[in-house]
Amino acid sequence: MLLLGLPRLGPTLPPDFVAAEEKAAELPRHLAEQAAWLGVDRLDLSEVTAYSALDGIHLDIEGHAAVGEAVAQRVSAMF
Image (tube, rainbow, N blue to C red; front, side):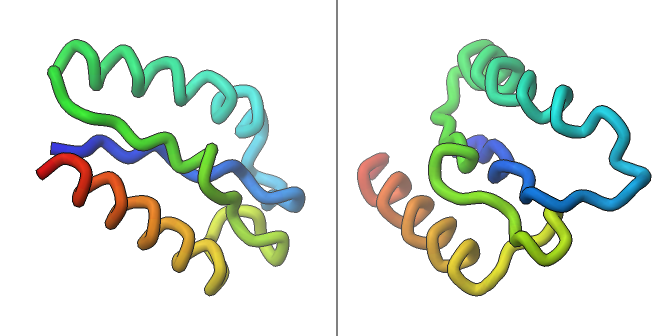
């Protein structure tokens, strides 16, 4: 099993994403704790890519490619 963390937030966020940056900053630590507790591998996508500058919450083509490549490499290394 591979637990995926979220990519970094983009530079532009919707107005209703109040405190999203603060919460997102804490997420990798929480996911690392959960992965350790569950005994599963973890891939922190915030170290791989960020969400698009277009809206800050969706991946662009390059982001999708980066995630796909990172996941493929990690899964290959697991087996």
